[in-house]
Every structure is written in structure tokens, then in C-alpha cells.
Image (cartoon, rainbow, N blue to C red; front, side, top):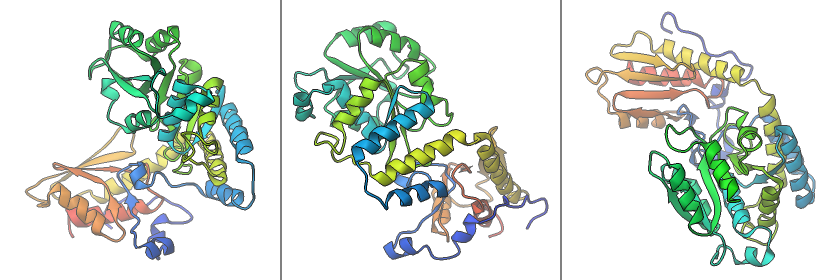
Length: 388
């Protein structure tokens, strides 16, 4: 180990060691698991890794029969109480939460209208989105519910007059916004005021808007939005197949009305008893967790990786202010490997490591590293960039 190296984060059970022995199920399937040093808890990468307490709750729930309608109501109410919301609903991922919320805005709890979805002819079906928010999973969720997306403004935002004209032109069902800060145009508070004046619900897609924890109630309770929809399998670290919808009682009743196990548009978006138990437990842990402590652990991992690369010729490292990620710059004259070659070399190793390399920079994030994996990431990077 080079001089000045910071040792790996101390832990009782090394996640790195788990890669030293076969993982039976993935070996059987012929699929290679990887270390996620990119910090991407995206659906295509399997979301997050669930804590042991969540897995234990799911196993326990799997051993008994239960009425899903009763379980759905009870878990929803407990989750609403935990977050200070009027009501809450567990969906089959954030995208299905958006679909069901839009269906609720279009057809309400009218059985005749609900049975026609996604045919929304003659119904209020215009769903307004800022042009700068387009191009995500939200688009297909809205269309699947029968919504007709209407773009608002430009890539820089929307003016008040543009917003008012759009809402008055056509059968408005809802306004759907991404939960992020926008530098220009109409702010969220004013959007909610204008939409509420016309009785048009405002839905917030917050699939990746956690942390901070406060977002679980800020958009709904504090800012007056009708629903905040987020993923259960990202920062909350619940089952990847779950999502959460927080909002008004009428909005949540509409989501339940259109959802499984009812025979309506959401019938295929099933949430099992195991997932209900898992997301309930995961949310309790998330709300009680000190996220500063979690960030401190990630920062120690980055410190170890940074120290391990210290002294390599042609290498400069920059640790972000948060301490949880770093950028490695390398001199092409010294490291004669194209960025895609670095990514492929990291993935070809044993175990595979996922990260991002672009131009002459490599980005490493520790937010999804398991304890001990920082050693493997540091070893591999030093091998590829230096004395390997």
C-alpha cells in the first residue's frame, strides 16, 4: 500500500468479501453483478440495495395470507401519518404512481369513465408539462393513462400569461412538474395558485428528489401540490418495484380506485404483500436515519480512493464539496486509454465495477458503494491508471 493511504472503512462484515465467493443465484442465471461506483440507483441498474431489516420484513410478510385492500389502506394511512400528509398510496414504482394519479385526474372515481381508459375522448385529458421537463418516464406514464401532453413555454420556463392561456384552452386534467429548481420563468408557488384557481391538480414527479427527507411533505403540505410521487427503491432503499404517492385524500382515493387488485387500468401494476411490508419498513428506517452519518461514510470511502491514487504520474483528483464523489483527471500522454476503454476495463474485471469516464475525466460516487467496496474500486483504478 502506498505511503499515506487511508485504510478502508471499518465494518463488521465486508461487502467486498462477498464478491470473493460465488453468489449462487446470479451464477445460476449467468448474470454478473457489479459494484456501483457511478452512484446511479436507476431502474436499469436495479435501484438501491435494501437493508437487512427490509428483507426480513418481506420474508415475514410472505409467510401469511392477507387481504390486499385492507393492507393497502392500512399501510397508506401509516405512511401518511409518518410524513405529515393527508393520505398516501403505495404504487408499483413511481411511473405507475404517475399513471394512476393522472387517471384519477381524468376520470375520478366514475366507474363508467374509468372502464374506458385509456380512451379519454370527451374527458378532461390535457396534461400540462413544462417543455424543459419533457423526455422522461413521465411522458409515457401520462400517455398510458390516456393523457394528452401539452407543452408549456420554452426550455427556459413558462411565463404567467402563457400558463394562464394554456389552462383556459382545452379540457385541463392536471399539471405535472418535475421536482427540481428552475432558474427562470414561473415559480412553483405561483403555478399552484394559478392552477388551483382553475381547479386543476398539480402533480410533482419526485422519483429522484430524495434526499432531503423534507420533500416527502414539502410539496404537498407546505406548497399545496395535490400529489408528490417518488420511488420506493432509490434513496428510501425499499423494494425496487414500489413507489409512493402522497397527496390529498381525493387524489389517493382515485389512485386506489384505478389500481390493482381492481379490474381497471392499473390492474397489471400489482403491489404484493411483501412489497407493502418492505416499503413500510424502509420508509421508517429512512425517516429515522441520520443522513449526515450516511454521507460521512461515503466521504470516508472517497478519501480512501483519493489517497490510493496519490502520487500516480499524470493523475489529478478533485473531491466534491459534499465529499461523497470525486473527479479523476488524467493526462492522455501518460494514460493512453480512451474513456470508453477505462469504463470497459472496469466492467471486465472481477468483480465488475460501474462508473463514468468522459473526455479525460473519471467520476466516482460513493453513495451506493457497500462497505469494503471502496478497496476494490481503488485497487482497480490504480491498476488501470498507474502501475498496472
